Length: 623
Image 1 (cartoon, one colour):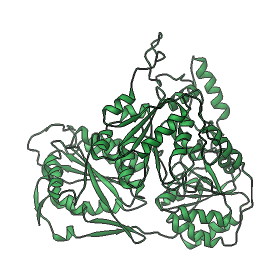
Image 2 (tube, rainbow, N blue to C red; image 1 turned 120 degrees about the vertical axis):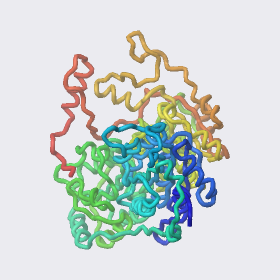
Image 3 (cartoon, rainbow, N blue to C red; image 1 turned 30 degrees about the vertical axis):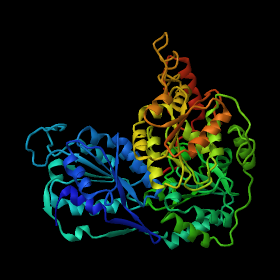
Image 4 (cartoon, helix red, strand yellow; image 1 turned 45 degrees about the vertical axis):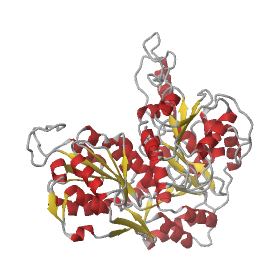
């Protein structure tokens, strides 16, 4: 069959399927794109020729945002289906780098198809070509190599079949997955070639559930049986493996309490008897207390990042770790016993291995924390607040409380960087394994709006709310236009606090005095301490086509959120918050170095506090 390289690429992708537990998904369910001279005659023409039934298309406005949308989609699909992103060569291609890094850090599959320079070099240099005198086979797309799990450049049509199969291998591998980049020289994209029919036959990529080694499983069970204060730490692997019900069964059978990382939050319903809530620097008092006294910790699908371990300071030096993880790389962290296998299959096997075992009961003041949480959220009781009117403007926690009261169990809340992830990790009451969607592996500003679109495309039966700070909104609001264009009814909650609230607080803590973290006019001394900037984000959102609500009281806030939830259009609820009433502070340490030498009193005081709180080096192995 004679097709262009781009036509063959699109046709191949349209017949690839992923299967797990007997359920089949399209591996690449659609494509985002922005067209320029580097892909318009190739992939652009191929998409037009194939039509939306073969490859649905979404018109992006920013290449980074397209990748974020694909990540949101793929995560919601448990990494069994994803979206591709095509761009021109040049700035369009390099704009992919941030999104690619986010995908790879979070181990979420996305397929990137940037255009590239001419393979035949009819003129040199061509428009947007990076000239590297010592390596003429280098282009700007090489910037994607370190942030991709697989990278190839298709210099000739004959290279395409083998590269496509390798790309699919990585996209469908729970251990190896991340960003996959196929750089496509613009002349090669449009070149015709006689392809074998075999290339376009339907292929099913089976995602297995490997069991841990039997000897390692028995050793892990013996270690847990010997524990006096065991603890489970649930990570993102629980959700990717759809293992939440099996985790609940494990916790109920053994009585072992469960704490959750950012990626693992929602693995247990918030009011489950064994649920301690969030762990680490942004953790709850019960979870962090359990971590400090734990003698054996079972980590399930966690990468053990610094926020989870409180920069290695949370656990006692004698704590033993068992790590159930699909990736051996993660299984051996914390000098742990590695159970390399699928989270769901591994938990089921471990539950059977521990039959008859019951952990000693301990009190971790969970009820007290839940009551305190209700008060911070501005709610009348643990189960979701009353209708009383609270202070105005609300605290950020009270905005979260209002959203918690309005959302149904299957609704989804999306967030990423700033102070909001910490507040959500501590305070949000997840009622469904898919409700909590916070990207904190890369902590990337700009993720929320496009990711919310991706989530809604993946789960059209769920309402989706993105909590968006003013800093994030100003950085990447462009896909609002796509949501309006395609009628994707996402809901934004725009939180205005006139700057970077999280980094502003951290700046004060480390003695940098909040320098350049507020959105204000310059003050008398030249720093940014003047009046807030007269930026009207509500008017901006309305100008992009959103239905915008601007509540003026706590009652109106809940009414606005309910109206947004019931609207068939994309919406925004705009609310200014009171930063003087923060959520409860950190329960565990996080290592952010402070300048050792300074003439400023604030910095010297911060350094003294840092030295006093820093744990001794080597107190916790993090191999």
